[in-house]
Image (cartoon, rainbow, N blue to C red; front, top):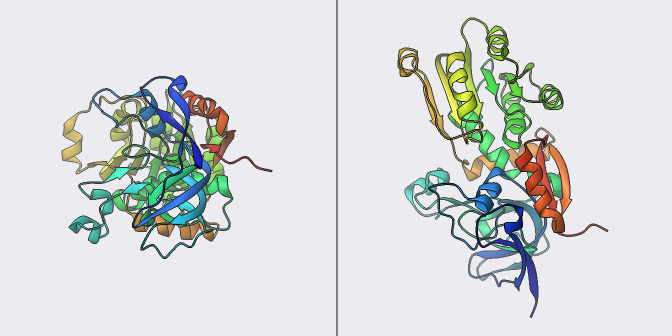
Length: 349
């Protein structure tokens, strides 16, 4: 019997909770494809699945991992494409494909929407079984590491910048955590649609990265004067859109910087989940506070087209072999990473 090596979380904990196990290679059913994973990339979701979140129940035991690049190894009944042998990227959002939300293109609003590696076994494995709708040909311009690092963060950033933030030419947009996967993607997408961009980060190398990606200016959020500098950059009207994954530490100062009609868009809360704010300027200034999780599958396909043209490029911090996936988790958890942390499942010659 052919077996496949996976990393499975059976109980929450530190990196020691990542258990290597062998399981039979799954056989694709109707509408499914079997992907041999070459490379996967980590997201903060992987840390939450491994370590647990108070009040959130994950369906353990679970193979984490939402992002990946690999090769179609087998097709299930009824699947005609992509053909066996096609190099693909994993599309991490799962939906029913039949409800009115899905049929309208808003698959991320489907009542059964879930994320690979959160609701079903993910890409920390030599093989992953997926609905055929959850793979797309990998852009030839992106190598395996870059292709694996692309989907979740660029999908999330596109939804925040374009859909929720409604960024357009001239929009003044502030990106927090500029060197994170979402932050580095958001800067690129914002510049692509013509927005003016500023960013925050916590280290000189991260600030330099933000500027290289196209930010007009970048501020160290450890500097007590960073909000004054951001206000000076934006001008008297303030900032139109804030893109944030930090949460508690950046929420209140971000609201103070927002213009009339400004949008604060957040997709996570890595610094804490408790938010406090004065409601008065929110309604007096017609501001919007917008939560954002993942995004439309069609938008991710559009972003992949732009990657194929060289207009969007994931930033990679480091690459770890599969045997050292625990160290990869530690690297991401340290917040020292500048870009995405990647794990190579298949060894390179």
